[in-house]
Amino acid sequence: MQSVKKSLKIIGWILLGIISFFVLYVISALSISKISVNSDVSQKDKPIEIFILSNGVHTDIVVPIKNDIKDWSKEIRFQQTKSKDSLVNYLAMGWGDKGFYLNTPEWSDLKASTAFNAAFGLSSSAMHTTFYKNIKEGADCKKIKISVEEYQKLIIYISESFKLGSNKNIQWISGYTYGNSDAFYEANGSYNLFFTCNTWANNALKSANQKASLWTVTDTGIFFQYQ
Image: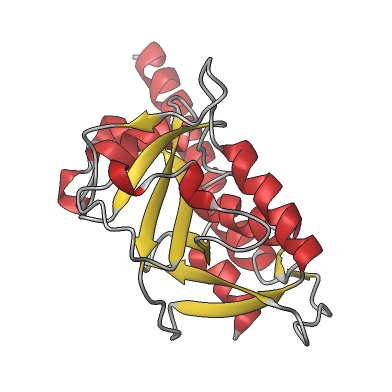
C-alpha cells in the first residue's frame, strides 16, 4: 500500500512538471513573440518586393521567381509541379517537419506519432515551395520592400535550408503535393517545440535585417510586427 502511494505521488509530480512546462512554454511564446527586433528598419526606396504569407498556422516567405540577383526556377523547377506551368511570378517557400508536411495534408490526417516526432525533433525536415501568378495583400499577406543587399542575405538563408545531394543539387521529394503548383524538397535541420516553421520564417526576416520577433513559434508573432 505504501509503495502504491509512493508511485502515485511520483506520477503526480511528473504530471505537475509536464503541465508546468507547457504553461511556461505558452506564456513565454506569447510574451517573447511581442518583442521586436529591427523595428526601426525602413522600406523607403528599396527596389525588391517580398511577402510574408500565412495559411492561418504556417508562414511562407514569398520572393520573385526571377530578377537580376536570383533565378529560383533554375533550382526549383516548374516541371516538378503537377501543372508544370511556367507563367508565374512568385515563389513561396516554407520550412517544416517532413513527416507532418508529407503525411498530414489535412488536420484530420494528423497522427499522434507524427505530432510527437515533430514536437520533440525526432524526424527530418522538408521545404515546401509553391508557385504563384499573383500575390494579393491582406491580413494574411504583407508586402515588404528590401534592398539588394538584404535580398542577397535572404537568398543565402533560404538556400542553406535546402539539403543538397551528392551532386550538390537540391533534392526533390517526388510524389507529394498539396495542389497543382507546389513541390517538396529535402531540408536541413529538425523541427521541434522551440524551432517551428514560423521560427524559420521569422529567422529568414532577421537574416535580411527586417522587422521580426525576438523569437516566435507562431505566425501571429511574425504578423504582429507588421500591423
